[in-house]
Image 1 (cartoon, rainbow, N blue to C red):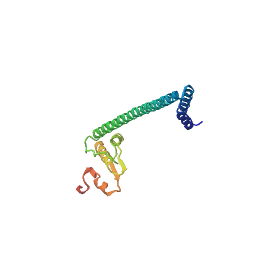
Image 2 (image 1 turned 180 degrees about the vertical axis):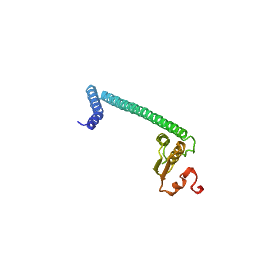
Image 3 (image 1 turned 120 degrees about the vertical axis):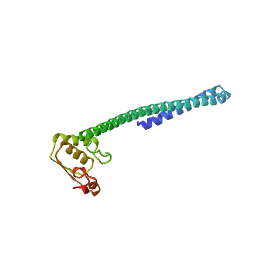
Image 4 (image 1 turned 30 degrees about the vertical axis):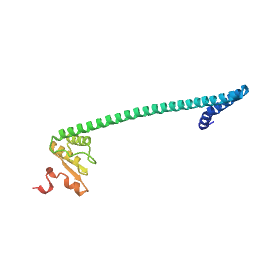
Length: 190
């Protein structure tokens, strides 16, 4: 028998049994006297109805307690998840701030770092670029796309004392903001 039919049978079993019980009590009272049947019948029916209602209320309360327990477990799990996400985001933010400070230290404050949000290289990437340039001391660096990475690489090359940076940029608005030789604007060349 399927779970649905078991549920239907379980829900109908009590009212059917109660109806049969009331019928049996009334029939028994009828054998005693017809007046007894008139008194016992409604009293038995009322008692059976109250028992059925009590059982249904008890079942509903038990289901409510189970739902409440599931909801509390779900809320605890959600709260724990939110706390883990918050801690992870906090660690990430702290790591990015530390990387930004380290990048500034590597560049020795040669130029200010731009704001690193959106599509810009993140501070941890800038730190890796700057430290790689300082350690490897390349004579030529080529990059595609200008931005915060251009500034970090150029400042690190300047600090190391040698090297040249070639940046390729296809968008005129970004090319116009890229640092020129010696970080002077392009129109100010001697």
